[in-house]
Length: 95
View 1 (cartoon, rainbow, N blue to C red):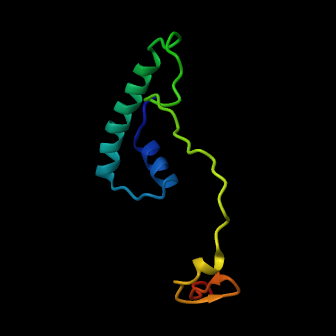
View 2: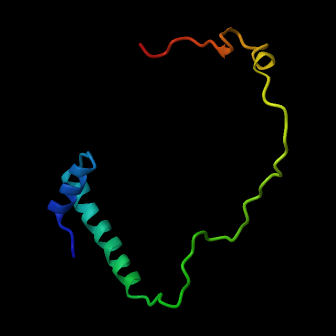
View 3: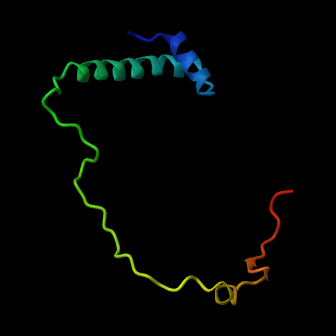
């Protein structure tokens, strides 16, 4: 499929972009080159290539589960500029 100026204007409209006539003409060329490249890539036989989840194999480091005392709310609020009912008091931002 080859794009024309009408296709580019439609895509720009869907993306809420305004384009000039000169920009639309330039995008036709660039977008058609991209579509040609994608078509070229789709011709490559990848049936013997395993699927990848990540480009680099890595393990997720996990910390050991350690039983600890729960967070002390009173101590946590000691440095709060304002607290009320064991909660941080912050300025109202939504009216």
